[in-house]
Each structure stands twice: as structure tokens, then as C-alpha cells.
Image 1 (cartoon, rainbow over the protein chains, first blue to last red):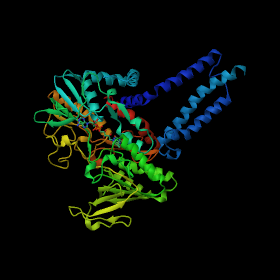
Image 2 (cartoon, chains in turn cyan, green; image 1 turned 60 degrees about the vertical axis):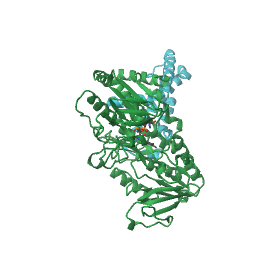
Image 3 (cartoon, each protein chain N blue to C red; image 1 turned 90 degrees about the vertical axis):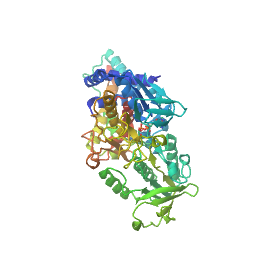
Image 4 (cartoon, chains in turn cyan, brown; image 1 turned 45 degrees about the vertical axis):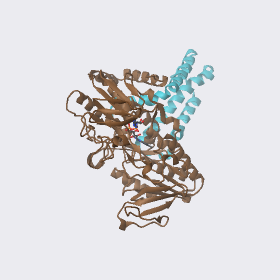
Amino acid sequence: MSISSIFTVLMYALAPFAWLIIAGVVILLAVHLLAYMRGYQITQYRCMLATGIAALIGLSAFFWAPWLTNSQFTYINTVFDWVAAIGSIIGAFVVAFLLLHPLSYLVKGQDT
Amino acid sequence: MKKSPFTLSRRQLLKAGAGLSASGLLYTSALQANTIDTQARIVVVGGGASGMAMANRLATRLRGGTITLIEPRDTHHYQPGWTLVASGVWHPEKTMRPNADFVPQGINWVRQYAAGIDAENRRVDLANGESLEYDYLVVATGLQLNYNLIDGMSSDLVGQHGIGSVYASVEGAARTRQAIKGWIDSGEGKGIFTSAPTAVKCAGAPLKMTFTTLTHLEESGRRDAFDVDFMSPTGGLFSQPWVNDFVKQRFDEQGVNRRHHYRLSAIDPQAKQAEFTFEGDQGSLVVPNDLRSGTANAQGKPTIIADYDFIHVVPPMSAPDFVKQSDLIAQDGPHQGEWLDVDIHTLQHKRYPEVFGIGDVIGAPINKTAASVKAQAPVVEANLLAAIQGKSLTARHDGYTSCPMITGIGKAMLVEFGYEDNYAFMPTFPFIDPKDESWAVWVMKDYMLQPAYYAVLEGQA
Ligand SMILES: Cc1cc2nc3c(=O)[nH]c(=O)nc-3n(C[C@H](O)[C@H](O)[C@H](O)COP(=O)(O)OP(=O)(O)OC[C@H]3O[C@@H](n4cnc5c(N)ncnc54)[C@H](O)[C@@H]3O)c2cc1C
């Protein structure tokens, strides 16, 4: 399968979720914009709680990613499965972090 | 044709995607460069996976001429999803889309059944009495389910009297799910899974239905209260030798009684009894204790009677009757009288060079899958265009076929193979071993194959 075929199929696969992806990106951008306007800087601000919760959400993906796909984590078997599972852990962590980190700043960060 | 907002947004998304990828841009411009002028009248009979893919490909490649698609149905059915419907994983609605979403602009869509093909006079007769003349014909009718060849059986029975059949239709798949659930909810009993004596579409589907039902049985916590038999009319279960051995071994491990050379020949729905004709060497027949000997049939072959609480029926299959009655049907060889007579590599008809075949209808040793359609469509496109231009046909189909072999709900193997070397594996991705059961392959089956299929329909993949 050529790269362009893989790319085409990916675009078709993502198309039904386009509204969800766009809504998610809009929410993320809105939270970041709001936080930046109030002085938030991703590299300067530290929040162990937000990072910890994001890490927990990321790790939990190991269990709910198979469940969400009508499967179970005992079926994670091949190297490719493990790469996909670790990818979903990292992906869930990054998204959760990008949301929770500026949110925590908005809630309490300005005072700390 | 009218496009739904969803299709538009998806196409826009694809366009945007093409803008992002250099390879995508090159792909588009290469296609435009290869557009040819013609006055030819091209008729595509059948607008399922293969016919729709051909209509889209030809609409992109030809300038001038006429392309006519004969397809009676308004709804397109994603048949590979039916196994998931019958297994209780998908809702039936997920497998249906309006055909209007896929029919390309600028072609004639005739919403009629074709009733006959006169290959000598290059004419297709329609059910409404009209006819269409062609210069080139693409036969893409899919196949016909011959439930009538099993005495007492009809597709109307699916969902009643413990009868299931994933092949019947999407409604049949949903009713099959109910029949399986009813059997499991009853708490005990015998389930029989059958296979057909002919080539079938997605030859893995009868095996997948057995595996997904085993998952439900195991999850019920009462696996031991159920007997599961798999009756095969031959000595094998699957054409690919490694997979055949794997499935046999897995059935044995999961307590499935394998009976070979048992062909389902009759069914008595009221009595919940099935009659099997023994197709093997008669001396080798030992009727198991849980089955009974029946009377020999008209050909003197022994029959065996089995009681069941659930039975999964796989009907014999062939080309549709109107294709069988035409000059296009194979006149000799293994596909005689049953399948379209094409060269399995060029997909051109062996006797009528202006006719091409694609999809389930063709006479080929393997290949009745949508995955094969994906591989065949560019070959038919290239060879049909070559024929129009008077060039020699150089594109060749290697027999590629694929079956995500579901071995339980939540795991599958990406089995891909072709004609060569006794159906040797042809893996698309070097990092996916066709011999491994995998969660990621299941995810592909559940989420990625349907979009890939729609990309094929639109001529994009
Ligand atoms: C239960 C099941 C599971 C499957 N699983 C898989 C899988 O996992 N992977 C895979 O790759 N494939 C799978 N398949 C197979 C795949 O769906 C078929 O191989 C594919 O659809 C074949 O395409 P086709 O165009 O030849 O036939 P079809 O898609 O069946 O289309 C035939 C079309 O012809 C039309 N037609 C019929 N008669 C006439 C007539 N007289 N006049 C005009 N039009 C007519 C029909 O309306 C239909 O639209 C599965 C199929 C089933 C049933």
C-alpha cells in the first residue's frame, strides 16, 4: 500500500469524526487563549496535580482503549499491538495535559 | 447526482488532505494526465463494491462517450460489516448508505434490474423490457445465494426456528444475531455451523461466525452446556493452507466438533433437524453418536440427520441466473455453467474481448472479497482503457484477496494472499504478521476497513 493510499484511507476514516476533532481543537485553543491572556506560559507554569491527573488518564488508556474498541487488554499481543497501545497512552496523556494544565492555571494558577 | 452534506465534507477533507501531501498532489495530476477521449458506450451492470468503483474510475478517466450504470437499489450495503452485525458488535444501520452518495456526476444511472445479456449483439436487456447497447461491458453483478438448493430452506426462514445466515441480507444478519442470542439464552443445546459446496463470498465469514459465537458462549459462563459442530462439505475449512491448519487446530482447542465431507442438503425447520449428504469416501463414514443415519439420496450417497437448537446456514452460491443463461458463462472447466468466463489475470472475457468481469461474479479459484475488488478495479480500468485505445492489455491481477479472520470478538488476523505459490501470504504491512492474532488488526476491521471500502467505491483507493 502506497503512502498516498494510506493517507487517503486515514482521511476517510477520520471524516465521520471531523466535527468531534474540530470541536476538541476549538476547546483546546479556547482554553489556551484564555489562559495566555491571563499570563499563562506552558513552560513556566508548574502544576503537579494537573500533570498527575493527565498521567493517570494516559495510563488508564491501556484499559479503556481496548474496551472502547469492543476488545479487551488481554488481546494486546503483537509488537504492533503494544506500539498502538503505548501510542494511545501517550496520546491520551498529551491531550489531557494540554487541557488540564491551562485549566488548572485558570482555576488557581494566577494566585500561585 | 445529489451528494449528502457528509459526502461533501468528506470530499472537501480529502481535497484539503491532498493539498497537504505531495504524493496526493502527484497522484491527482497523474490521473488527469491520463484522461482519454472516446465515443465508446460503456455499460456497467451492477453497482455494488466493484461496479461502483468502476463507474467512478471510468468517469474520471474518460472524456466523451457514455457510461451507464445499471443498479436497481437505492441503498448501498457494506456487506463486510454484516459479520459484525450478526455478532452483536455493530448496529445494522452502520452498514447502509444511499447509493446516490457514490454515483459519480455525468454518468447515466439506470435504476433497473438487468434481465439478460446478448453478448453476440452487444446488448443488455432490462427488466422493464428496454435494452441498452454497448461497445464495452463490465459485468459486476455480484453473486446469487441459492438457498433453494437446500431442501426446505429459504432466506425467509432466517431468524426463525433457530436458523441463522449472515449472508442473507443485513436484516438476515440482525435476525441471525437474535437467533444466536435466543439459543445462548436458552442455556444449553447444540449449534451447527455449516459451509457451502461452492465458492462463497468472504470464505472466512462462516468461520468468523463460529468464532464470535464461541466468544458469546464462553462469556455466558456455561460453555460446557453447549455443543458446537462445524460441518464442512470438503476436507478443509479455508483455501489458504496455513490458515486452514490454524483454524482446524483452534476449533479442536475450543471444543468444536469438526465433521468433514458433510454437505447440508435439507432442513426441517419445524422439527429443527438438518440433513447432511456425505460427500466423502463412503467407506470412511462413521456416524457419530450424536447424529443419526438417514436414507441414501437419489445418487445413492449416505445422509446423516442432526438435531439442532441453532444452525448457521451457508447457501451454495453462483453467478446470477441471467448471467448463467447468457453466452458469457464459463462453457467448460471448474467454473462451467456457474461463473463468468474471464481470464483471471487480465479480467477480460475469454471469448468476448469487449467484456470485462470484476468482483464476486467471476470464475476464479479465490477472490470473492471486497479486498479483491480493490486490487481488481485498477486492473480492469487499465485494461479496458487499453482495449478502447487498441493497445495490448498489460495490467494483471495477482489474485490478491484479504480476510480479517476474526478469531474472537476483539481479536483478528490480517490474512492476505494471492494466486501464486499455493496461495502464499501477501502482507501489505511488513509490521503485521498474518499468522498473529492481534488487537490492532481487530481495530482495523472495526474502524478502518469501512472507510477504506468507501474510498474504493469512490475510485480513490
Ligand atoms: C457476510 C459477509 C462478510 C464479508 N466480509 C468481507 C470481509 O471481511 N472482507 C472483504 O474484503 N469482503 C467481505 N465480504 C465480501 C464483499 O462484500 C464482496 O466480495 C463484495 O461486495 C463484492 O462486490 P461485487 O460488486 O462483486 O458484489 P456486490 O457488492 O454484492 O454488488 C453487486 C451489485 O449488483 C447488483 N445487481 C445484482 N443483480 C443485478 C441485476 N440483475 N441487474 C443490475 N444489478 C444487479 C446488486 O444490486 C448489487 O448492488 C463479505 C460479504 C459478506 C456477505
